[in-house]
Length: 237
Image (cartoon, rainbow, N blue to C red; front, side, top):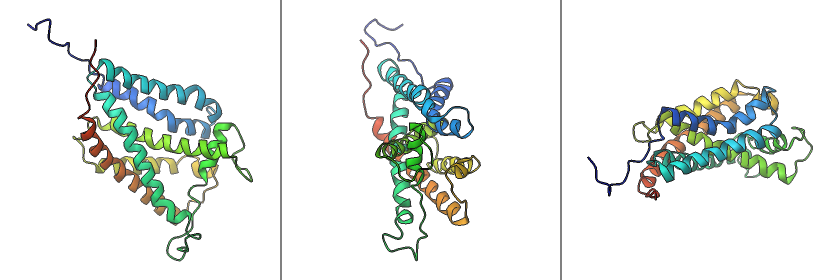
């Protein structure tokens, strides 16, 4: 029997059901694009009415666990978001020499590739504008980049929702996760919609870039998980 002075046990939200809910809410980011591809719902509708509410629900769920739960779900979501964002930055840094091969004078070593061309097109889709335009507005560029990084961040959350515990899986599982995402995207209308020629060079570069994303995600998750474990949870009243 426990005394009245002992704190009540905190609820565990990081269960199979909780992880599934986190995965689905986080997956709304990439679902936004896929729904447009398959004519289920345009991004200009999906973004404000499904994706953003789902993202807010994810934050609210993590906040509930931070306040009332044992903190596992909150730590997983915060770790996944930051790790995914860092991995997305590493992913883009790896691609810079291909994007700026001519400007940097390295085209004899690195094939020039317009790997960033999709970002303003993402923004145009969110704004309800034509995908192909002679020139894209600043808003299309900014929104497109924000959407791109939202994918990276939410992929991190989805990865942690799959593995459950960052310390029970080797970081290389994140590489498999990233490569699976890339393979899956190649079989969607993604290349056709954005006018991407799926050449051998393109496949090799994009697979390598996603491997970099996976390595960055796996290592960042393990490093950040150790640090987040040291953060205290908010005490209940």
